[in-house]
Image (cartoon, rainbow, N blue to C red; front, side, top):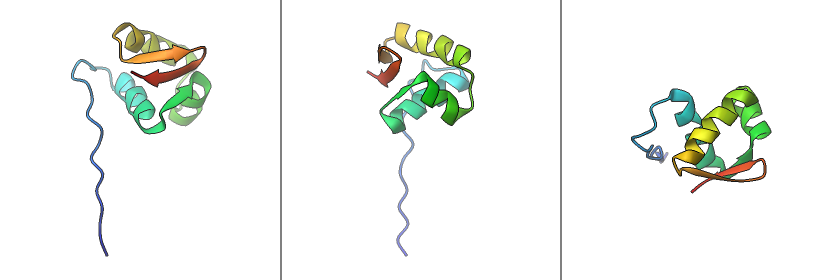
Length: 72
């Protein structure tokens, strides 16, 4: 049996918050997502996600089109 290991995506060093890292990794693996999709998948409240996404957007790490977010 051949085991394959996929390396975890590299996180930007400026990401300090565990929740911001979680959102970043989610977008890394899913491409793009709405706040509702992220909330359902990650078990996070929308208000928390909006705050995290606002910070990630300000830092130039994510972009949005309406309610859909994706990594830059």
